[in-house]
Amino acid sequence: MTVLIISPDYASHLYPLAAMGTSWQDAGERVVVATGPATSSIVESFGFDYVPLQLSRGSNPGVIRAAEQPKGEDAALLGFFSATRRGMIETLSFQAEARLNDLMWEPVRTARSVQAIIAELNPHTIIVDHLAFSARLAMVAAGIHHIDVVLGHPTALPLPGASEVYGLPPHWPIAFSPSEQELDELKNLCVKVAESFTSEWNHALAELNPALDPSPDAFAEHGDLLVFNYPAELMSKERAQLLPEHVFMGSSVRSERTEPKVERWLASSNERFVYVSFGSFLSVRDDVLGKVVRALRESGIRAAVAYGSSDLTALGEIPDHWLVGEFLPQVTLLESAAAAVTHGGNNSVTESMTFGVPLVVMPFSTDQFAGAAALESAGFGAALAPNTSTVEDIRTALGTVLELPDEKRAALHALGHNLRQKTGHAKVWSALTGG
Image (tube, rainbow, N blue to C red; front, side, top):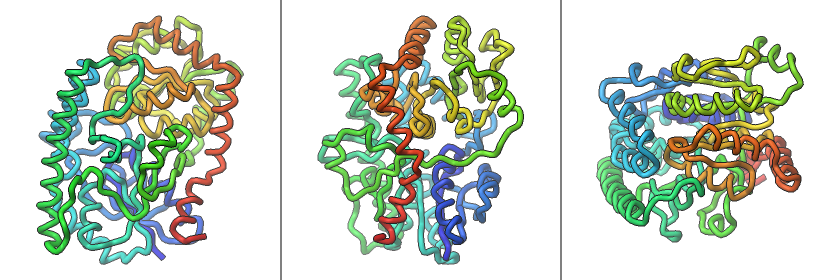
């Protein structure tokens, strides 16, 4: 039996999908991953077979730099980084306008490549990233059953019945206060983009299979089994009731190889520490990362800092007893961390919740705002606006999450305990087999 995983060429997307694949691997089945060359080494590290598949112009093997991207993609990335410096509305507007190019790249050609891979492998199970629109288009056109995994806050799948539109956060943290005019303008833009995106989806669908009816909203399309890599406890029951048939996986956490340097650092002190990472994209914001470093240093808090694409010298003085690296084993460190500072990406949030780690979230883009609002509402984190928060604001937020009230601490630990039972993959397996 063969399981096929289809992922964009981005490490942050591939890791949770590959962790899902280990359930089939452990059952003695062959796991094949179709993705781009930048993440082929990650596929091999899991012991899976690799099939080349380019789903987008850009790629991200773990730390992304504009200078390493193809022509055109580099300018888009620099434009995105610039937008994050201007604020929430500007960033979401930039992402909305760029959506046609970065979510459905060469749809017909890519879809046919996907169909050819499926025909050759004849897999009995297909797992695909929800954002791999061209790949899902291929399977919709051919009527191929697939598991559709939403790697983000559940609002990444908009619900028409809830008056949602893709790209407009239904909720955002208290630290952000966009005006009604700004929100109206953003909504109008997102509606225009959704209409244009749906038109492109339908044009490609008609070329691939003219017998099928067009989609009313391509952003709301989903696979046969819808899986959310997100804890159900962080989403309202009212919204959950509006979802199509689905499974909340909770988290999909990978195992990491032991790194002696990191193990020695963890064993060198019983002092609590804070883990800091802005992920593979947003680590470029060394101005914000520098404020976090200063807040931790002035508070006398031990830290492990993954600085990614930041200029290390821009972060200021780094205490000798800290652990600092361009890339650090996030899962390993979160197992022991007292708290974490993050941009609010899906992996950071779900992995932190798995180990009961409270968060200071500084969201920059996409569904990070909705995720930060959910953590703030649950009392499992504090949310700050990255551009306007001061060092003192960050120190206060760190104090808040390091000293959670007993009730919130107990609830967070209970959530972590549930997620560590790894029942999420079993839920998916059960939904597939009826077991």
